[in-house]
Amino acid sequence: MMTVTYPEQWDLDTLFPGGSESRELRLHMDEAVNKLSEFEAHVQKFEVLTTKEDAPKVADLLEQMSHVMRHLSQAGSFIGCLMAQNTQDKKAGILESEASTLSARFQNSFQKIQQDLVKTEDGIWNELLNEESLRKFTFVLNEWRDEAKMLLSEKEEGLITALSIDGYHSWGQLYDMLVGEINVTVTVDGEEKSLSVGQANNLSSHKDAAVRKESYQKLEEAWTEKEEFFAKTLNSIGGFRLETYKKRGWDNPLQEPLHINRMKQETLDAMWGAISKNKQPFVDYLNQKGKLLGKDGLDWYDVDAPVTESTQQFSYQEGAEFILKQFGKFGPELEQFAQQAFENGWIEAEDRPNKRPGGFCTSLPLGEESRIFMTYSGSMSNVATLAHELGHAFHSFALRPVHALNRSYAMNVAETASTFAEMIVADAAVKNAKSNEEKIALLEDKVQRSVAFFMNIHSRFLFETRFYEERKNGVVPAARLNELMEQAQTEGFAGGLASTHPHFWASKLHFYITQVPFYNFPYTFGYLFSLSVYAKALEEGDSFEGKYMALLRDTAVMSAEDLAMKHLGEDITQQAFWEKGIALCVQDAKEFISLTSTEA
Ligand SMILES: [Zn+2]
Image (cartoon, rainbow, N blue to C red; front, top):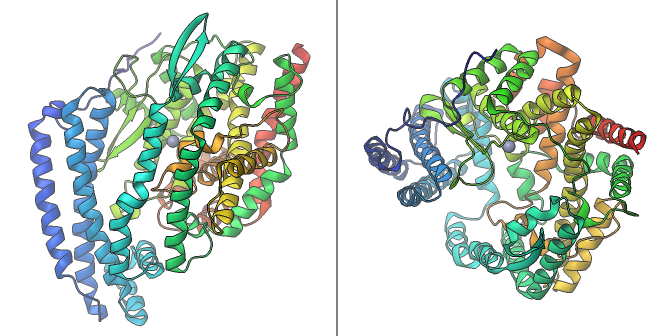
């Protein structure tokens, strides 16, 4: 029956033959250095714009800039693939640090351009943007200029950047070191095991309740023992941020994350408002899950517990066929795109040692290709992950006609195409489930995601917001952080849990990422935004694919509000928009409850 066999290993040789020893890659890197040096020289000579006749000069610089960017990201993505496919590849590690030095140099030149743009007088600026050669860059150019306006002088910002290496980012690195030092002993299947934090965390979905509880308690003890170190680290990161914001005259800690995600405060408020109003069905789900586990109320450490044993397995070929079939029902472009990704060796899925954990999709702009990385072991959730990554690749495919400078979409819309593709497959899987038990397991997978985005991430957001408020008045001690965390969880889960996780603030890496503040709400945004695109697709049927691709093409050239208005006709500053997506998730929770009630 099966006619084609899709390769389970990706083909990197068509990009640069020979892996980390590749001569072609070496030549490419050397060329990148030359191109970058020329660009730097050009930027140094670049001057403040004084007339609209300067437009061709700007256009020239932008072309050169995008050329260098594409060159660097081609190398960066390829090296990333090498690192992921073999964590023992030392040569790839050396290439990686070489590539990151080049990106830092590029970043410096980019900042210099921003500072020059901001010095341009407003009238001239608007005339420039009206010139044919620059019109298509209006959004990004304005954004670069606005960013620069929000900052202090070139000299002051330079000082902050220089001091932040040891005074800010190193706190984030210290966090990684502290966590890396932790080992806990847990009894798994009658055997005592010494585990890293990551390994112990993975036991949260272990089928044995005693294992889940013990690993949680041992970790909680470890966080407690070192809580003062974590509190010091968190306070230092928060303190540095707040002090920088104060100097720049920003009084709202959300200003920066909202700007990065090109969205308004009203939008964020509407999203959380709609979620807060609709938590009851998920509380009911948590209670039901507690019952299924034979408990009165669900504890924190049982949230990820499996309630059924999902046994359905899919070979890689079957998984691929399933994805293609479901994509085909949505639209021919998505199906054909995925087909060629499977056929042309864009996907690394083989289950073998020395691969990095997790999955990703990376784009290689020079040949307009992508590569997908994951480890496929045959579960339905692997199939969903594969669809997810193909969704990311399809986003890059949709952006092909767009200029390279108009492709930098933000984190909140980055997950639109991926979640959308995943949804197509996850929904079909529920419909095609062969038994009730299978169906329950697949539905649970979906509801768990809603619980994570609506409850867990909401509690992280509440915690972080309140932490910043208190941090403005001084250092927040560990004991108070525990209190804030427990309050945030009680509120985030709407009282749906029998116990909370007071040291969650210490355990979650996301609070310590210095590059991106508030590494939480964009996830929830992306999930719900793509759900509403999905709802629209169900409504419109076949004709939707063209509109969908048009939406993806615009993801990096307008605000989130404008994107939704233009392509969905929706006002995302209103709760009504968010409630539509939530309603789909509520259905899943209700169906889960009804299926598991009749079972019992
Ligand atoms: Zn993703």
